[in-house]
Image: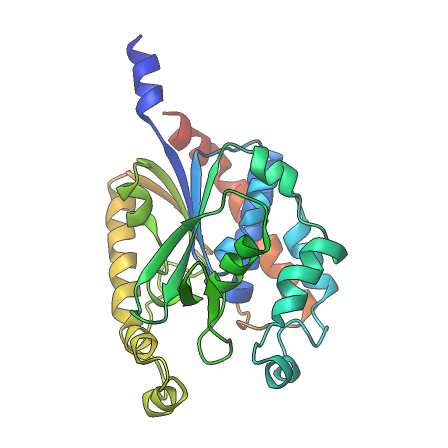
Length: 291
């Protein structure tokens, strides 16, 4: 009876930070989780942690790396040409509608049947504060929430959805561990895309950034202070990790990949690094989740 009550009180959470194409590390980790039937009660993703992480809930092993390799050289998939033509570095219609509906279909049926809750983080353009959203239905609006979470300032248009104007969730909450704890998840696994030595530096070229973001002063302020927020989150995570309260999966070394990487060899290598890292940590992960 005591064991049953204990198991009922445990809520297993998964937190996936962003990092654009560094997110392929996370994709590799998540595919190994799927192959080994590692399950959670809920997950929260930010930016690429959301747009790639949704394939974990839909249980589509290999989908993330597959479409990233397939479209790595497509002008609609992260190019200056796309930005000039559409106002978005990653063409919104192609990436969030054509691709998931026609070219490499997203499995909404499995996503919605999976009882694991799926949250994402975006940033309110008006306030610079995080907005949290649970995806519960199949709709174009939900796809727009996904786009909002990953829409990088200065190279993306704000996304209008559900009464908000939104941009990348990483601007205001890069690693939403405390959010998951706040809503009741008390056994959390955190997937980071930076190695343990990394600390974020202040945003470069502040005067230019201020000009480019003059229509969105709250976003500029959030970005100017982002390194403070991010490094504080890392400190919190390392304290929780040292106490054995969370399990962290991270690269052992810098991934050596740009945010908008198009080299398919590098993309695949980062994905494989995630797979190997997850494979190495599986025994510790199972112990942590089942203790």
